[in-house]
Length: 366
Ligand SMILES: *[C@@H]1O[C@H](CO)[C@@H](O)[C@H](O)[C@H]1NC(C)=O
Ligand SMILES: *[C@@H]1O[C@H](CO)[C@@H](O)[C@H](O)[C@H]1NC(C)=O
Image 1 (tube, rainbow, N blue to C red):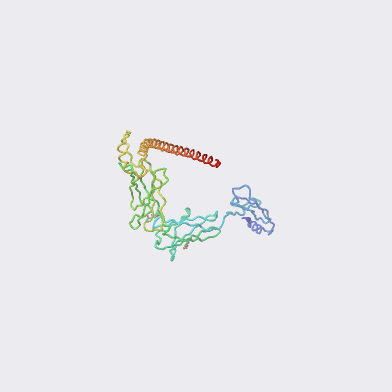
Image 2 (cartoon, rainbow, N blue to C red):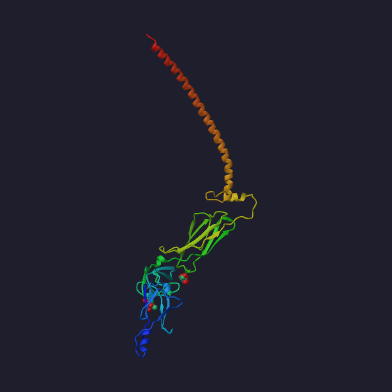
């Protein structure tokens, strides 16, 4: 805003009420509430206040006084913009509830009112507005309709603006995450974990709206999740890593509607499989028996390290055997080369002798 012009018209009326009807204008003075100085301004000869290049610090109540200190006029200055478009997003946590929230794309600096309605294509019904949270709620929408329209009207002192958004309930359906997720050990089973959870409390618990659950788990520190899907409220994991803390999360989705969305993951939960604390002696025979038959999967660290110790001894024997073997092979090769070389030398010697004798023969004059 570059210019604000406040007139102090009351002064003129006072002049008219004088008996001699003089039109001489008395000087007035302007003051701004909560401030000793006025922003950059001019007071025109007829008493108007002109503010130049106004910013938000110029907001407040301006008062005009006559030369005897009497209040003539008071005006409130508030700066802002008319409403702009809204950015609308909707959440559908179950089949009976739609909540749409919005944010302003234009900061108006002015208090606003919102009116929202929801249409199934034929008729409009209200979307109940919460002004402070900037959202509105529709209960029992016509879920069988593929597309709905939401219209929100923002109104402030400077104007009003409609924003419409099309809403596809089927694609927006996204349950809240499963609740009360628990991880429990199963006594006597060092590789099993029991994971249980409850339906999100915002999801109606009828058979009419089944949910599918997606469970993921991994030993703490691992990068890779193992995953299971389930229609039940609990599951037993068979391949936990014995002796390790595991991270577990569960999420859910409407089982029937494949276009709907997965919920967020439940918070990360930690659980450890059962461990045999009753045998602290180093004698680990029973554990050996238990873990040996399942070699294919990543195993508990204790049997593995023991296994590698056995392997070290075996490896040493193998190395010695290899060295002996290569010594034998090398000796054989060297003696063979030597024999061949000796033979060659002898043959060379013979041919040289033959050659010299031939030369001699040639040179003999016949
Ligand atoms: C809000 O919109 C509805 C439907 O369009 C209308 O009937 C109602 O009068 C409006 N209310 C306000 C406060 O504008
Ligand atoms: C649907 O979700 C809303 C919002 O979380 C909740 O208030 C409502 O009770 C839920 N409806 C049912 C039937 O659970």
